[in-house]
Amino acid sequence: MSNGNGNRLREGIDWVGYVDWTVRDFHGYDTERGATYNAYLVRDEKTALIDAVKEPYAADLLARVAALTDLAAVDYVVVNHAEPDHAGGLPRVLAALPRAQVVCNAKCREALGEHFDTAGWDFHVVATGDELPLGRRRLRFIDTPMVHWPESMFTYVPEERLLFSMDAFGQHVASTQRYDDELEPGLALAEARTYYANIVLPYGRQVARALAAAAELDIDMIAPSHGVIWRAGVAGILDAYAGWAAHRPRPRVVVAYDTMWDSTGRMARAVTEGAAAGGVVAALHHVRHTSHTRLVTEVMEAAAVAFGSATLNAGMMPQAAAALTYLKGLRPRNKAAFAFGSYGWGKGGPEAVDAVLGEMGWERIREPLRVRYRPGEDDLAECRRAGGELARRALELVAEHAGAGRDD
Image (tube, rainbow, N blue to C red; front, side, top):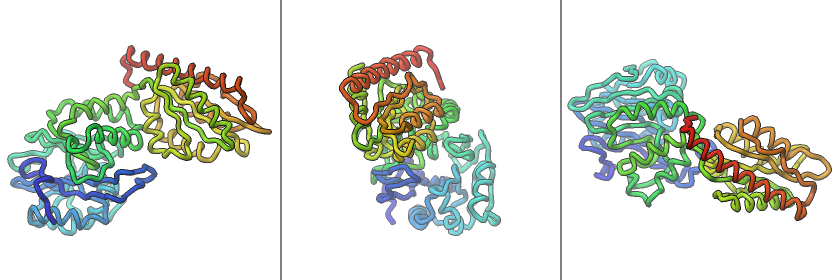
């Protein structure tokens, strides 16, 4: 297998991972552009493999390593994270690397023992600040718990100003290009935004601590374990993560809904019109035609959300419930919101939505907006007024957050 210069990060440091062109579902996250499972080989007086790949692709990784060095010459396998998309191939990889020690932190060693039979593995346990000399270069380790698993860790090469950041700063992009500036402008950052929203969003405080640790490092390149490597956009991705970690709201309103006979749909369109007239960017999403992946990505940065559902069996529509369940699990914060929807002989849909908005801790600016059967012109005018009210509160939240310099 070829390991051409396109995979070279630095002299003696190469990408040896796997590009998964066809994956379209990553435990509920729509990966429309595919994914990569990145691993890296550092060759010095000693040789270290940084992370592995999913189990089905272990042979591909080993072939890339073998194209660069004798497999028996690999001294270390650094495991920054025990999740199976990175560690799943470890048993096959270690079986092929007879002298390799497993370098990881204590929590990772424990997690690996829960996934695999590690009785025969030679562990070298490290903690924040520990270094492993390879020759003219060192590996320095920084624990980053809950970014996004308890055992997550950064590995840093001071001499190269190179950070192996595991899932932090990653994106799901399948590409033959290895670097952010080789993709079309803005694509890497857009996919990093989607990745953060769907994977990392609940862990803002932990991300802020990891960013503080990274700020102590001189970083010229960030090599994550998914997607492309950051070389031109290092400052941009660090700044973006700081904003996302702080749940920094932007002047945007998201209107999401599910409908039965388009009564709630008509209400949703009127709410969107009112919000747009209020001076914010407004986006409308029918939850049966918008993936959860896209919806949470837009909600993450929106200052305000209106969520609607028709009433079905005294509750909300099933796909509205599914979308709210996904949102609730990812815990986006600093939102103003209200519920809306139609009903017939019995209420329940908007009320059920309103209850979930309250459970998420969002500021509800009004009681649920309800319409029986079909909305009339007066009802639609009230929807527009409610959208305008939501836009005004969105702008206030943006100003409040900016003025207070809040880091939530």
